[in-house]
Image (cartoon, rainbow, N blue to C red; front, side, top):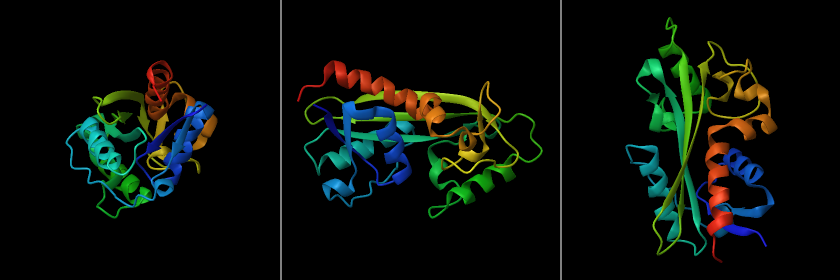
Length: 197
């Protein structure tokens, strides 16, 4: 019998990615599926703080364990920006393209384009301390976007030891090497080893 958890998002891309990575062992419900319309404020200064804020807030609306992630892109030459502000780097209503364009403008003329994606996942169960899982994927930032798959900064991020962007690699490859995949695999192992229904 599959474990059931609520993922604190209505982002269709993220929902699909998480379900693909976790497979049939963990059933993932969206906020829509538990009739939750709350959008928690991400006011934390770290990925861990934001993941916990989201998980705690959503846990008020369900008895299932809640998974919340905060993830972003950290660029060395920009002092690890956009970091926790990755999703709203170009403003609160920014699109993926707006954020990517701002990043590329800031990197114009800069040779050091090393960067890494980080994902922090919080597993929150009532009456138990939260548990965190982190994954990182290192790479470089392209000068121009390439590829039509993925989302966010995927078209400009090329993982180490590869020559294609996340948006070119395809779901199967990305879901094997991405920051979120690494964090989710750690969490899945933990759930299968420790979960008590």
